[in-house]
Image 1 (cartoon, one colour):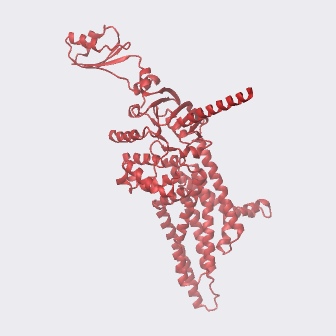
Image 2 (tube, rainbow over the protein chains, first blue to last red; image 1 turned 135 degrees about the vertical axis):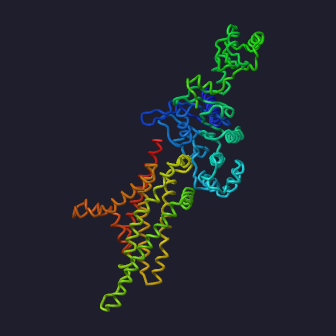
Image 3 (cartoon, rainbow over the protein chains, first blue to last red; image 1 turned 60 degrees about the vertical axis):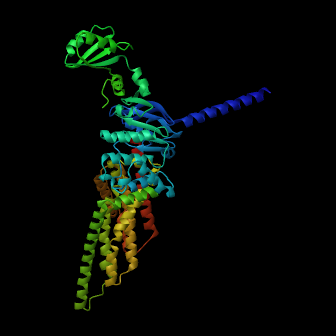
Length: 336
Length: 253
């Protein structure tokens, strides 16, 4: 009796564990575990660990040379890590490289493309290489060309295309074959504001139904797209969380920006003794930046003092910290 | 492999490099052909003036010299076809795309190699009209012509395999081509040093690995299994080295 109870209990435990494992595998699409890469004696990436869940957009942020592209290359199976591992949908990128690559659509940094090919022939090649069935290639290419607004340039050689279109072609080759995981290394790099917004729009359209890993050196461009971000500095993860969590976590004090009519010095004298004011910085003859202690909003008090002192108050606003400021706080240097 | 093969063909045929190689190859082959034709014409004139002069053997005075000259064209032009296998992808950064598509390194190597071989064969086919012209003027030994072409194709395959190795080691196409030509010339002339070791094993080895010793029978109309196996083994050896080089490149990143 005891033996059969034990056996049943054991089976139940095993079944539960297998269910938990199955859920974990299905839910956690990218698992980066203690990833390290050495180029000779120089370490490019050291002990990087993070996971990306199904449908999540995960951003890797950091300055140029921080090791983001090296991480992306290892995630995309381009090169193996020195130690540690990357699993894409439970496929190890070294041991099960081909299976892992089947799950990924990768846009490398600088968007390398076969410039002597036409857009259509390149996408056809990408579809064939990704194993799209012969009878589906034409419809797959047509659909991707249409989705990315490449219809009017489909017959043109890639080297004759403007940068914005080249970037779209890069995205198109990553999307072709409908891979569940997309890995984009600096997708808006080198683009002007309008082109960047277009690409950001395309990525936004994909979010939710694709798992995405995006690297960028420009936090302001991708912070709005990402569910979670990791700051990479000197090859290590400096901080990880949602953009909101990170800005909150590293907000030690509230900054207030004040614009007064050419009377910055007088304004400084007026508000310097207000309780809660930590420091005041005169940015120019009419602009000040006031750092305050605690969570209390001092704007009403400051505005009252300035108006009572007869100083023309043109603007007073909280100077919200962006991810870029947070990164500067963490690493002590500018992102780009 | 098919996707890589057709992509490579598409890139070759849309590149000016192919047309320059094809045009120069055809022009120089044409010059060799005209030169051999002029020699035949001179001999014909001598025969008409001196009836005692023995007849002309077209095989030895025309076909063999033309193909012997064309061999040297293959030695110098095949490396130019092979130099872009990987060097071009590395320089353009597209190697990152190629290596992250779900295509094995072996298939990509074979796709590139076979595409290069197809291109070389296409360039060789440009000289077929010259042989047709010869057929109109004389009665050539078509068997000899066919075996000579076969020899050029096998030789080209061997040189392309060396090109694949060097192209996988560098991102500079010109370095890859120079090293391939250099190694080809070493394997070409290595048989000459066999005489230094008469009767010895070293001499035999040098003679056996010499490219010229294995292509010459084809140019004389003799197709032997031994020579075909040599070219296949030679090509496989360098393709295996190229494959290992690609693997090591991946490890180094």
